[in-house]
Amino acid sequence: MEYLPRIADQMLQDRLEAFGAILIEGPKWTGKTTTAMQHAKSVIKLQDPDKQDEYLETAATMPSLLLKGEKPRLIDEWQDAPKIWDAVRLAVDDSGGLPGQFLLTGSNTVDKSKIGHTGTGRISRMKFFPMSLWESKESSGMVSVRELFDNKSYNIDGSTSKLDIPELIRVACRGGWPVTLQMSEKASMMIAKDYVNSICNNDISAVDGRRRNPKIAKQILKSYARNISTMAKKISILTDITASGDISLSMDTFDDYVNALEKLFVIQDIDAWCPAIRSKTAIRSTPKRCFSDPSIAVAALGQSAESLEVQLKTFGFIFEQMCIRDLRAYTTEFDSHISYYHDRYGLEADLVLHLADGRYALIECKLGSQEINDGAAHLLELKQLIEEHNKDEQQVPLREPDLLLILTGGQMAYTRPDGVKVIPLACLKD
View 1 (cartoon, rainbow, N blue to C red):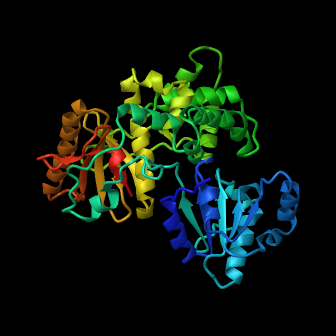
View 2: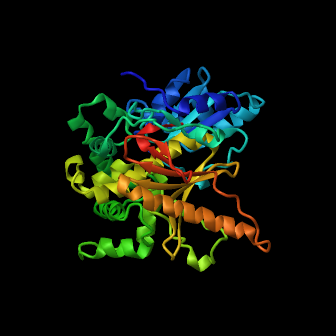
């Protein structure tokens, strides 16, 4: 099977030259192990059914034995034996901090009470995401997110997308799972459904050894999907889940299930951006409901590419999820994070992309061309609000946005006379 290079490859190589160990964490089925194996010289897979019992017993008694092997040594699904963490940390210390020794991969977060040290300075954490459209070779890559931030004279005009709306719907339904790229279209559409079933029937209980009801897990994912890309409150989602009367669920139990899904990197909500340009009560602060990949929402809703072609309003919310997924992948090297802005006056930015150095972009996700003017008006009004705030000498100045972007499902990129850049999602790369 051909290995498609990932954005993470260069990041991982850079970290191997700087740190003794690297932890690669993110959703399952995203290719963490496959990518790590491109850089490792020896591998141990703790979930190997032929050796699992032996490995876990060794990890419980003398974990250092599992670290022997040519370096870098990959320890896959290390969280099954949490003692590995402290053994790796100690091995890095004993070597004097020699870089490039260990790679750790895992699909869920570990119980911190089971490890003795954070690993700071020895083990570097690296986020891993489902495949972006650029990595799956479905984006033209004619517009670089890095260049948008770094080069003020960067010309995007005339850059074209490789995908039209029906094709965008199909890649969203398929998802960013590398295995799907080797399959027929019909077969690839089944993977996300199997992913959701696996999460609900197995992983949500295995993540911390607490038995959970698959039916409740599926209903939570379905309700989350119905509220995707919105600021739905927890009580609203809970009411939706229990409305039929088939499921009785307390808020504490709901929180427990959601926390488990977050540990599995399935649910990845984004927080509100609350700059001091309005009173605190005017700016909404409820997290925006998100999944790590748009296909999870499609599968949880029981939708298909065919059904979404006649439900473009619904697909608009799913399209926003695909924008979030790809932006995370393209900017992870910047140590980025994504938020949103929405106030009670109706002023909004679907996404705010923040870089670690303080630069940021205000972004609207608009599937069709008819919505672009409204999106641009929102971005310009928010920029103006920040400018007016900065004119008040009694206020602490805020950095003005570095970019105003509208990500679309259209065919061509261009810069509007007002400076707002309109870019098809399938034009982007890192």
